[in-house]
Amino acid sequence: MRVKTIEWKNGKMRIVDQTRLPGKLVYKECETPAEAWRAIKRLEVRGAPAIGIAGAMGVVLGIRKSRAADYERFIGEVREVADFLGTSRPTAVNLFWALRRMKETAARHRTDDIPRLKKILEREAVKILEEDNEICRRIGAHGASLLGDGARVLTHCNAGGLATAGHGTALAVLFSAHDAGKRISVFADETRPLLQGARLTAWELMRAGIDVTLICDNMAARVMFEGRVDVVITGADRIAANGDTANKIGTYGLARLAGAHGIPFYIAAPLSTVDLEIGGGGEIPIEQRDLDEVRTIAGRTIAPAGVKVYNPAFDVTPARYIAGIITEAGVVGPPYRRNLRAAFRKAGVPGRGRR
Image (spheres, helix red, strand yellow):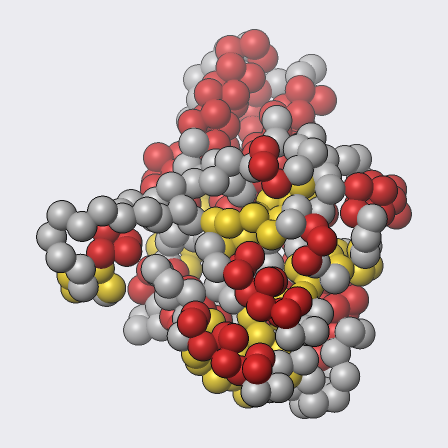
């Protein structure tokens, strides 16, 4: 049984607090943009699509009680809230895409009165959530076609329902294959330092009745060497125009390992994760996280006091190591610079960027 990761309920943003999983399934309500910002920053809500939805809802929380008497003052408040929310996770392009969409929606309705404009923005945030559900189902269906009966999959971090409105990206492929009656098995990397694979992916797959085996990150090479992996599928936080992909730290190493063992490596992500304004992976900003995330596990110190720490949240996998990008418009293969743009045209959406 899958859970609603995020929803708009009674004028509040309601999320699953993912920092409490797998021990407890706890729902949390956010009533202000500051609370939405903290939920994103602290990874209470996480995953590129879910972050985008949370950003859109955060804008609504910020303008619900606006007393602006005219459009110019109101749009100034919208921009201020959006800019603030954008500082929470600088790598996730879905966040900036959703914030830009909210600002553009307000601009299109500048002739409406302020009370109506507030309702329009609320509907737009909910629409982004509803669209994400449908997009992820399409990603799942396209990706499931790549998996035969008995397929053995390795995945990293968590790109499941918890990272989206409820169906997932990389895990949507697994859910769809499982729902179609295919027998699949999964190796889930634990994903240090915050253990999203152990805490979240294993939890989701077990709830779905999918055969999952948890491994330490440094065991991936061994199971590939033993011939126990047929395909690697991960999600993405930002994809450059040339196909270079930023995802959870450790993804690049998996892609290289997969290539060394002749195993195809796929990315599963909505087109909203593709940033056509960024030419290559070197331009993607990489978030640096709290150093204590590495020094501790579950609040327990595991390293000597004062030890230096390096803690980038993401790394970038060059496009040449990616067999295909599974999107709502189909599986996109190289050359990515041309074919990603074609996927946007096929999906009937404009090319998206950070601003």
